[in-house]
Image 1 (cartoon, rainbow, N blue to C red):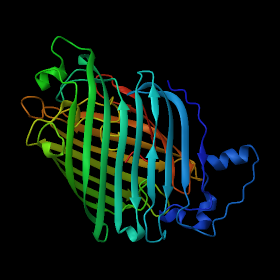
Image 2 (tube, one colour):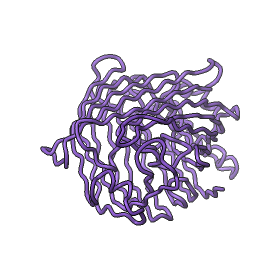
Image 3 (cartoon, rainbow, N blue to C red):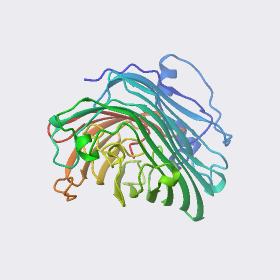
Image 4 (spheres, rainbow, N blue to C red):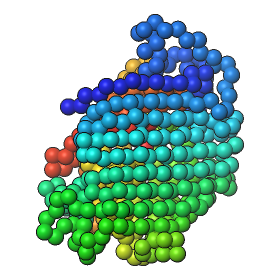
Length: 398
């Protein structure tokens, strides 16, 4: 059961999003979002100016809410998505800055700022992921056969600084470099068995870990609007090298391979079949426990719907998801999804994968801003061992 009290705001109504359906002014007027319904309900008249499309205009979607999620219990949050063009909208992708400050009944504090900025003609792409967590949360050991009853509560704080700059070398093809920092501190076990999962992996209690390294990123990206992609392909390979020369506790490496494919079902609708594969491999040294690949620790914390964040963890993580997105109302206000996913991590210390853990579910989409094509996503997912719960996102899950 989830109770949500919210105020929805969508600003920048004299602008349009970057996908083909909303660049047509006539089609825009046929669509409605939550703000349109609010204005109609309270008979507030605002005359939109869609004749002039100016770079720099911010299309803002806000979602203040209190509710419940499987990872955080009761929460209070203000999710905000700011979308804008830095240059000509016909040749430059829509840039986004996403933040979702959150406080939960678990006494968790999350302060993220995630950015994807495109400069003129998409020649330069800046990617940022900056976060602060004060995050008491459960871990369940290593491998795909762990039991949900083996939960180990860790209390820790976390600073994450990821920043990259990519240069376009061909159409939709980008190459770049960056810096990644994962700093966990004040790590303590709130409740744990005699020999906890955390201590068993580390060998002894560790209260602070630092992973610091450079990254090399190769990316193909034909999406014009990451809020709601259609008819596009995204592929990414990121190599990360952590070294004590940059302050890392140990020397270790990782390789992240990700792809996403979006297939528009018919020209007459925006119904879309989407696929997402996210795979992370670590090697070359001892990876801190909290830096190991894990459920729900992708950039937008969206993998593994059906499971609590951190449910499965290992030196490698393989993930595949498929989702069908469909409209419910003709005006675009409401839509729905059905999804299925599967993930696999190797057991430890054997390093062999012995199980694939599936998830599945359904979801509702509410259009918050038709100009940036930003949806509020409310999903209910199921996993093994009676795992289930609500999952929220501002903008499509992938």
